[in-house]
Amino acid sequence: MANITEAEIRKIVESIVKGTASAASSYTSTEYNGRKLIGVYSDMNEAIDHAEKGYKAVRAMTVEQREKIITQIRKLTLAEASVMAEIGVAETGMGKVEHKRLKHILVAEKTPGTEDIVSEAKTGDNGLTLTEMAPFGVVGSITPSTNPSETVICNSIGMIAAGNGVVFNPHPNAICTSNYAVDLVNRASAMAGGPEVLVCSMDKPTLDSAAIMQSHPKIRLLVCTGGPGVVKAVLSSGKKAIGAGAGNPPVIVDDTADIMKAGKDIIDGCSFDNNLPCIAEKEVFAFANIADRLIDEMQRNGAYLINREQADKLAKIVLIEKTNKAGKAVKTVSRDCVGRDADVLLAKIGVTVGKDIRCIICETGFEHDFVQHELMMPILPIVRVNSIEEAIDLAVKAEHGNRHTAHMHSKNIDHLSAFAKAVETTIFVKNAPSYAGIGFGGEGHTTFTIAGPTGEGITSARSFTRKRRCVMADNFRII
Image 1 (tube, rainbow, N blue to C red):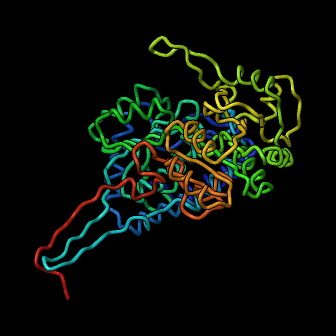
Image 2: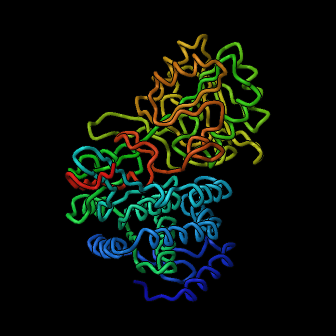
């Protein structure tokens, strides 16, 4: 167990909270305010060895002791949400500090803990069979730059609740933010009487360190939250893997919708953290007879309407052409534009607006790049449609079979049901902003690892377990 005292940990927390204002200029991937981050290593093999020790310590604990660690993680996350939000924006240049702060609060309050681990019992003429949810051991987790510390903390809570140790290979563009969260989890563990190093990470994560993690015999489960390339690599590892891949969530607005509410909800969801969440609204299919009213409501709620010429000009800036391995030219989003404020993006085409503008909207055709590519920036194309059949057909095509998330604003149950059946997404949000789908203003728990490709869906602690069966034949049935 930990050698660090509770008093020492509390002193660290106090200094962190007091130092929030200078968070943007006092961190590296291994230190914060001159304090060495706990659980960060230069060698992936060493990190895995320490994570295994953490796993063995947690495995020896009672469920109640595990829950004490999780409770402390929640407390520190709430106390230091602003710090992680500031570091996240400063390091990546993406998103909004206040929105990232809210995401950390959501993670702290609505990520399931040990209560999610429920045993099952079946009795009959032949006795009793007990099925329990057991840990895998050491989990290898790859995390993104879009929601770095949120994903580390959310995954840590679930994986620890399940009884696992964890080693992270974070996205290199968000390593400082991710490692701060790793340190927070370890500080929480120490405060609660757990191991001083429970989760681990790398000071300089690379493709090589990811490859070591994916092939290491001590890693029993791989969890990847990221783009299609890294998810494909993890799913090809030969190990049990959970993959949370890309999405391009469409929104349908029909002529029965509350247009005033739909306009506000769509802009609220699309602009949240500058469209970085993978569940956020990415393109709208609006019935032609309500499209003008919808656009007006969007403009009343912080959207700026650009014309088609401006949209084409902006598309050439936010999407760049690269040559893939097959020698074919493909379009990809510009890293310099992902997660940037709407006014920053508009300035690139010579349009000056204030910070009150949260989102850029434009009318386009279905084939426009804004519709076909997941931009992860506050740009929202609107396509006019003439029927629910056309809307569903185009929305399903725009989602590209990711089966991630879709949205609809309608009071017509037949329309809602038809779209839900056709699009087959893991999350389907009706008459609300996209973030309701992960428990922010909607019912249900939250996660930042939404596993569509591998089917686990909205992951939680039970997702990181394996089922074990214990059979007592001919006994322990008492009726």
